[in-house]
Image 1 (cartoon, helix red, strand yellow):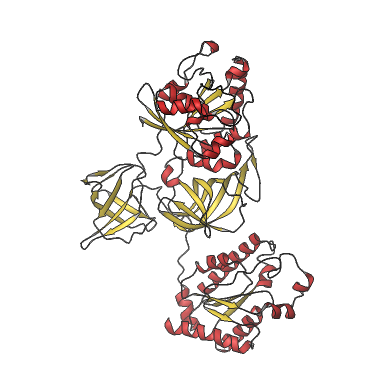
Image 2 (spheres, helix red, strand yellow; image 1 turned 60 degrees about the vertical axis):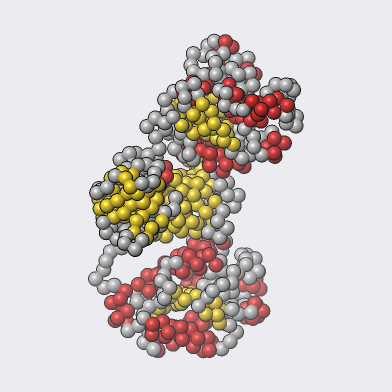
Length: 610
């Protein structure tokens, strides 16, 4: 697909001349108001060497006052230019400093062309390689490499060839469809809009002509139809499903399928700005089906014959870590892709890309600006496409679930396991049958509290009472888990998170067996306990806060942990996050039988309501 409107991300290392080149392009194409040009003749940055009366082209793209003061680009500045052939170019001038890589990622996410600036006096630097890699990962198909400041190396053809060779080496493993190399000078104007006599050895295009040539700006396959649902519109007579078509097209009378439910229906009406026969990519439409279906925000409507449109819980993805705080094993994030929001965890770092050598290295954590291939496991099955096929349904961000801060940008590589390939077997004897045999309902009783608060003692007494009542119960104690299932984990926050995750899934298996799972675990981090709660129905999970005064815990110190000042000890080195809305609060310094009676009341009440 050829477009007359092209988005170009301008990138490269700091001080390589990005803003100056864009400013020169805007002026020479007549895309800047004359009063702005006059201001650029008068205003000067601190320390600027450009003589008064001449144009400081870099000022034409800087929007923040702090940028002008520092002489760098911090935010992403957007400017438009029209080429001699009538194409409109939307420039996104991205920051060159490493700490602003996240801004550059935003600029690259919707780009068709990457204009990579390389300083001829310094050659490609680590940030040059990083920006080219990010652009490739973000699906940018076309790369224009402007080797700037060619005038400062006396227009040397040898320098130009050397840089071309160096850039070609690290881009050979990237996914650009086209690459053009142009020697330019942003200050002197060489090869910007006219071929320079100073580079008689160069026979290629000017920079403006490079944008005028046809470019591959397709971002999705016309054969793949995707309509992520943003809203369900209800009326007295019918309901329709609204969203923006991410790719492909849809006709009235088409047979569609809803993912992840798999329910099919026929399209009876398509409404955009008016009732239409077809919905095209990029259009906001509402679709009415011949059958009312339970569809929610974040679900996807696809063509029923599309065999690849299958939901999965596990995906391989390329990830750019954007947060100052390193990634922690087991931490739950919120994956957002259009209207879709789903909790997830990064379950494996396959490798991190070394920006100097482009080699793959193993790391146990992700630091800011790391580019990594990871495995992501979602809380439920959803449809995400390969980013190379459909950007809109294959690109996502990860957000911290507490602060809502964006921590990473990701691009789906492939579904690791489709739900159609990995499914729970429907056994003849299910949870209901096991509960019927046991004569009672299963649930999870999750005791949380400080070390030595009395959790295990209460859990032990509770199981004994249940046993005498002919109820099947089983205690999962923190020490028992640590000696086997979690013997490979330490006591850092990340390891505690993973320990809680594992115990939660063991409890899930126990209640499926018709057993009352009694968990006695410090589990000090609230978000970890909340993540476990999400595994169960509201009537299956009971959080019991054993709120024993710290002085009592310290006096008991049954294991001698407080006395020995064990590292990462909850209540000393690590904070305990108190539950905000537990089903029950008990005091571990009270009589054990009294506390057990209160817990039994909860369980009996659960039985009565079931």
